[in-house]
Amino acid sequence: MEYDGATTITIIATFLIGAIFGAIIFSSNTEVPVQPSQQVCENLGFPSIEVEKIVEIPATCPEVISVSLQDKALATFLLAIENEEDEAGNEIDLLECDGNSYDYSDIAVSKVTDEWSVEYDDDKTIVNFTVRLKYHEQDRESCRESYSVTVTYETDEDTIVEYEVA
Image 1 (tube, rainbow, N blue to C red):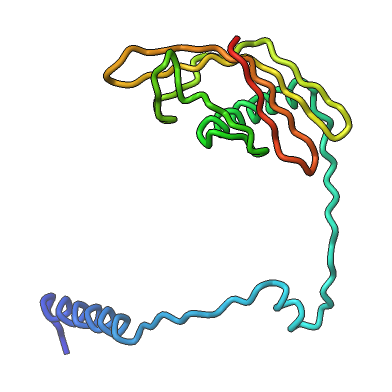
Image 2: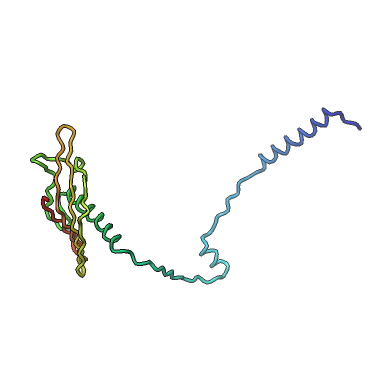
């Protein structure tokens, strides 16, 4: 029996179409639940062992610690301005400049001077710095004021923020 070219192509095309439809119809996605490794180990009879990881952290330079303390102190000072008091409940009244009242959102840090200090005393850390704040609102001129700030962190005590016009 001889087949011409058209018949051969028809048979091959029919076979391919059948294979494709069969694969589509009879395919299925099977989800296999994966157990956490601890449970797998216990199911295989391995005992669970706790491992303590010890990591050595190199000593950091005091300058790096002080810079991060200055950032923390500045953030503490700004939070005290926003809350209008520090953690200890001392009033912080810096929402006014030149007799004008401002919202906290109208205040921005204009400059933090390079002159600052950090004092360590047992459970107490004292950070001193000077900051210049810019008070600005759309309908009035900007006001700028510099403050000498002292932030005192003490273990198990509320943080104290003190300031004076510089």
